[in-house]
Image (cartoon, rainbow, N blue to C red):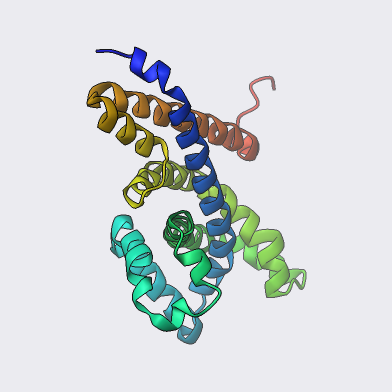
Length: 231
């Protein structure tokens, strides 16, 4: 093994790291913002509102992320009407197509995570809120959603890690992410072991940081469940 090649070309990996962090962070933030209202609608008993959300979730959870990205990147260009709009300036760019695919995908999974957490709200909390005259909106803001976010945290941490790993697919549509950097090094120097082992180390480091962050959040948000050993 010759890791001197990696040392000489480490700048490509840092470029890929920057693109990976940007893509994943933006997708997660936008996806989470989308998922909160979608999860509330998903719990509605009114099928007129809930059915389209169910269909969206079913599609994006039922098809591979790679297929979704190909449909956006390669498929949308066949619609001439779309190419005549301002959207084409964005949709012809690989970066935006990857971001759109990642966002829609993580929003679907996050919606289901939050939907389960919302439906798991203790009925006694809801009854207590109703007894003091809270409206449905106030109840959602002050009782249901804060409680749901806390319960959803462990499952959502897995979704963040899955999204990080799924972002490696961006390299197949010409984006230089961490995996894309490894592919460039491999194609130049024919060193697949060194190239992809380095990429794996970058992903492991990011995953460790994500796990550490969520452990800190869980420790803080679940403080009321810890036993006070000093008592």
